[in-house]
Image (tube, rainbow, N blue to C red):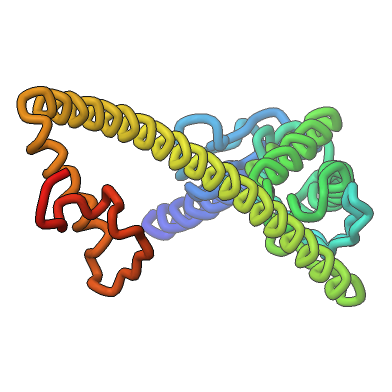
Length: 296
């Protein structure tokens, strides 16, 4: 009796192991599983766009198969491409893309596995690189609007993948480097240097023109200011002279003899101020009236 019981336990254990191996499967949190029935996909376990459901799961029938795909972002790396920009400059562009399996059912139907997906996506990536980068100048690719270009490439690849129903989504595209071929580098650098020199010359010319304008305006302001100052000084001098003449006239009218004497003294002072003045005059000249001993 005890021996029969032991045999039953062993049989149950074997049947349990067989059941577990054929009916149960585990899914890692980094994976999403696709259940196949007679080769046809019927259900997705732990898809990336739903709440995580990793752990132990059971199949409905033992003849169902389980195919697992990565739930994480995947890398699409293509060889460096030679691109001709819109200004006819050639560039060697090294780029890569990151994508994820957004629809495992469609992914399995379209490409079966990651290798098949990359074989389909690589031509899309290369074509989008050539189309987008071929429509802009080399300066924009090397150091200009690279971020906008990468977004445009990503959208172009996404569009082609959606039209082909690959069940993937391109997350982003990155350009590692965009270099000139060695044979073209020196020529392009010389041209860029020439363009920078032309731009610098234009800036200097504009600065010199502006400086001339400022100097001319300053000179005009100085001339106007001096003219106004001379005009005002002339007016003040004329008013002073008129006032002086009025004072002289008033003094003359009060004492003509003293006024004549004062004016003669002023004339003597101005004529003989340095002490070396030589004058040839007649002794009876009116200039020396007040030097004589008697009055006329």
